[in-house]
Image 1 (tube, rainbow, N blue to C red):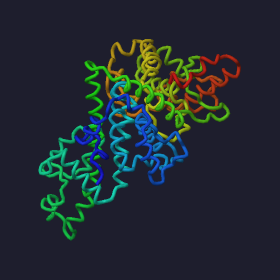
Image 2 (image 1 turned 60 degrees about the vertical axis):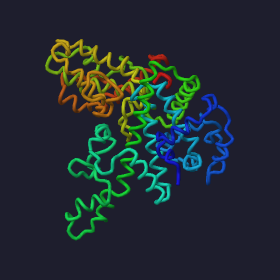
Image 3 (image 1 turned 180 degrees about the vertical axis):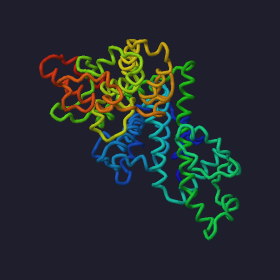
Image 4 (image 1 turned 135 degrees about the vertical axis):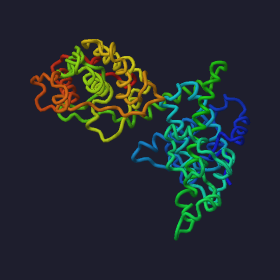
Length: 453
């Protein structure tokens, strides 16, 4: 049977493995034993040296790279990372998990893209490992880990309230009896056996609960435990200085994540004859009349919709994702503006400037509209943008020209460049292209390098 830490590196067994590590300086040393396991993993690709870990640091970074590749690369070759599913790697992988958690905790803030990547990667790693395990072995290890977490004869659903609140688990996934989660087959048959006419209760259990729900709860619990583990490390950083080796791993990880994600960044779309709709600094001179009029200030009556619905969506997408209408993917602000620097320093100040230009200033008599602006950016009904709240609402897409004419006709003052344009974003991209072609823009104002995204 596989070691418990193969699925739960936070187990006591896993912590003992970490305690057995000599010194943190060793994580950068060539590891013959690790290399031997990798090379002798069945069907493992060894021709591509980039995916073959030479050190524990390589193994830790490859955990994240595996996840990014697995989720984004349409030509992903599972054989590149087969060693992660060789149960012999468990001790090295457990150490990799812990040093990775420490590096992420020291380098990145709570709720950051990197924290989310690590938590999600651990969840997917557990799912994939369970799928590849023998049925009897899987059942045994899931039972053992759940028994460590839960009291089987009385599991209050509130025990999982954090998972439910974070939408990592839905109440509809659970079978409840008097507020308690039913996972045990005998308990299910005893409680509900007489409720099923003409059906075998044991089979109903297999359909509603069975191993699938137990594995789901196990995976979601371990994802939550991973998130809690990172937070506990961050809480200690105020009084404990992180080891230089972990700090260095954090820097390496930051670079590796940016480099790997950049290979799959598609936050632009074809602009037809206007080329690609590039991400870059906002060019006010390229704003369509409706947006320029909104920034200049709107009189009472149309202020709310003009600022909250029209300007907020236009400015955010024009700055971060002008090709939204040429894409078939769902995007969040942090997918592009990972640390929200652009949102805080460029997008919101312009929106607030326009709000102050209104007659009367929008926030003087309607301060709640700041919360509505945050909501339209996808960060929920809060007073400030925060990565922890992202996803509570959706990032509102820009209004079409037709809707602007219908709901905000006073702002629509068409000019010759509006011909055959059906959305302010299209106008903006076309206008930038024309200005660039005529030499009216310098390179610095047209776009920024991806390092400043």
